[in-house]
Image (cartoon, rainbow, N blue to C red):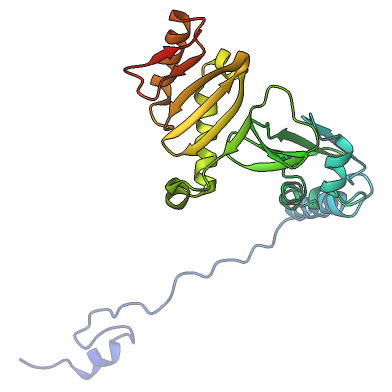
Length: 268
């Protein structure tokens, strides 16, 4: 077959291929026009920046939102003055920058009587300290003073005068194998556990909780009555047995619920 003539070759467009078919276009997508933000958008952006800057200045730089007072609630034995002195809240500091976690840590360290505390910002000028104090459930006599023990077994304060209706704890375990096996702290916790499981009337009448070993805990009640509790285990069953026993033998002076399925009472 004859090839294309000279005239045909000259008539080809630069974009045609060797066989005369059009070549793919090398032109890219049409250029987009750069649109600058309008005046309204610039005004809105400027207003937002001004508001943010003003808010930051108000929180940190102005005299309006600074600490001017500290209030304390929930104290019973402690005084608000003691709590606030230990808290050492920085007066005149911007309220937003007060480190509430640091204040809580100071209070727990300096005042072990505090069980929990919430440190809250009270806008626009205050810090609130909401305190919950530990309550003694047992006392350990130490010379002429008393160490208070709470329901978690924490020894949290030493006082000159024994609080009313709080039993004494006697840890008479010096020669007991239980001391080596469990340790004094564990035996203290078990005594607290027994105290917490006593029936209400018995708890109110308890004067002393004595721990001679893990398996031999006794109670001294008012009117010269005694209770052999045994180990701290099966506390609920022992409490029920003791309640029933005291109703059945109201004049008895000695009760044994160490085996709650076979309780015993004696004396009158």
